[in-house]
Image 1: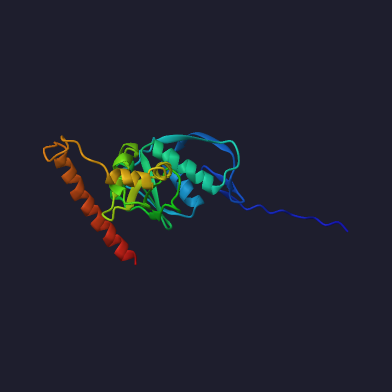
Image 2 (image 1 turned 180 degrees about the vertical axis):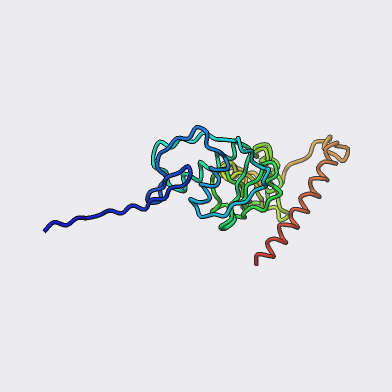
Length: 231
């Protein structure tokens, strides 16, 4: 007796994508409309999506070419990087996908992670990093030149906590650098440091430093309020 085995494939077709058994099939679209790209991504990941009606122009497109089958996670990396290159930042919050201008990303609530579980892609998130030694002020000051254009780094008042609000891939790169700075030798160097004569109250940078300190205290207050609300 012969048996006929039928293999049933799970197939889903979106406007610009074809998904079989959870993988996006190879395709090329040299002028993929951004709005359609966002819609297809949201449908693929079962997300509700929202952004200002005038945020994205109808004529804006992106070149997408998949040479091989792509997993949803790999497609997510492509999605975030493509929008980031055009000045947009998606933020996923549960089943909701927000899209905003990257320059306004600091005004949009972003997910908060520890340094162990944050997404290492072009998405913006807030990452809490705990130091071994009380060097947060020194390390944060040295990290600022390496933040992305709209990224921020805040040293907390306990001297051993740093908050990063930046692209996940850049935060990942900076944390690897911090591991080489958060050492006993560095801490001893800070303890024995003697300021130069010109580093006094007449330094013209002091006014800016005071402004940054006030801003830091406001951010810390908001962070503690948010943390208290989550408990």
